[in-house]
Image 1 (tube, one colour):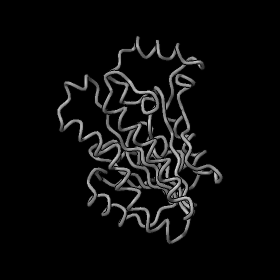
Image 2: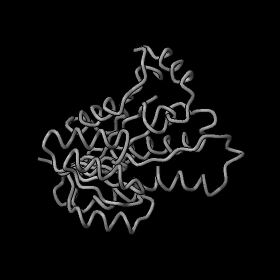
Image 3: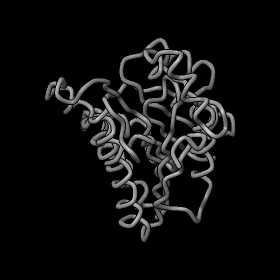
Length: 232
């Protein structure tokens, strides 16, 4: 039984990952920021332990990890998005995306590091996006953060591999979560039609990819695209 910590675990992909890893018998903790009722429901359904924590706050992350203790698998799923022209973004909006999507990984990996090094073993899974691979109009900041996640994943895989720590990444495509709630249904239907497999993804599709990377002992530094072939 592994100890798993999943950030952004109250909804969408994170909640699906909490359910999957809990169902296979792992001890699962998850971090969430504001959605207390959603987190309560996830805990009730899965038996996982939710901890309120903004991953952009290093002190809050350190406190959360002190409560959890050593982890075997760290899934850095917490993220935020901004739609709109970059020229219309405020500096505060830009900074918040990087604080959550990139610096949040920095805080969590560093908090897990002492336990990883003590055991000379560990697994980190980051979450990028297909837009981190190819970029998206009107999502410049989001694309930039997700591109940074890919580069960080590859660099950490090289840096931490000699210590027995694997670092991999999933890059989801169009996944039907709350982030898609404001996207026009016709656009979502068109994107599904443009995908070689003819549909958009589900949170469970991404959670299964996370499980694969968690168990794949000879894979590190890899970016696993979970986009139905939308970006190849």
